[in-house]
Length: 159
Image 1: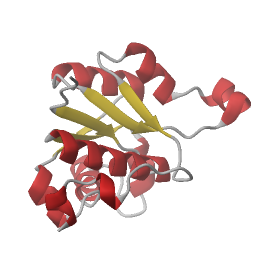
Image 2: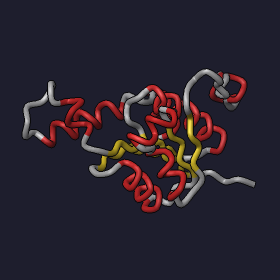
Image 3: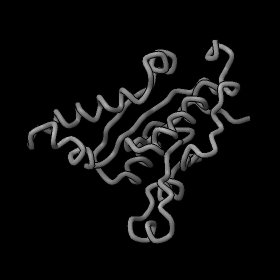
Image 4: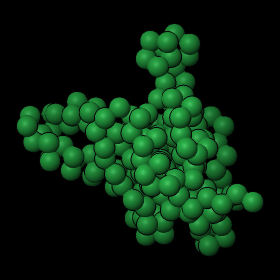
């Protein structure tokens, strides 16, 4: 039997990350697992530099944390008691390190599906995580074929 107790969702605020959250929440509910959300990288600076003056690193971290907190609804937050973390560094390496540090059972993450040329130029965080993670990785590409439907939720969550 599969026992999932700790599920990590790396989140870069993209649509595919948002879709990965839907899968992770459904899995967490079905397995009574704990969710961990992680944002990695210095891209937060670019996303928030219009909102915060340069040099206010704490304000930037707070801005990223605020966005992470809005990933789940208040009801999901109460039901699942997720943890939220922000780490600087290279996304793939930090995702794997976090999974090791927190003894994660499954990583659920979005993949952008850029295609061959995009992959050769930009690389793939998801591919690097799949190759080096200490646990299984579920990659979610887009919502065109969703598996998360109301019938898949536990009865208590549907009521």
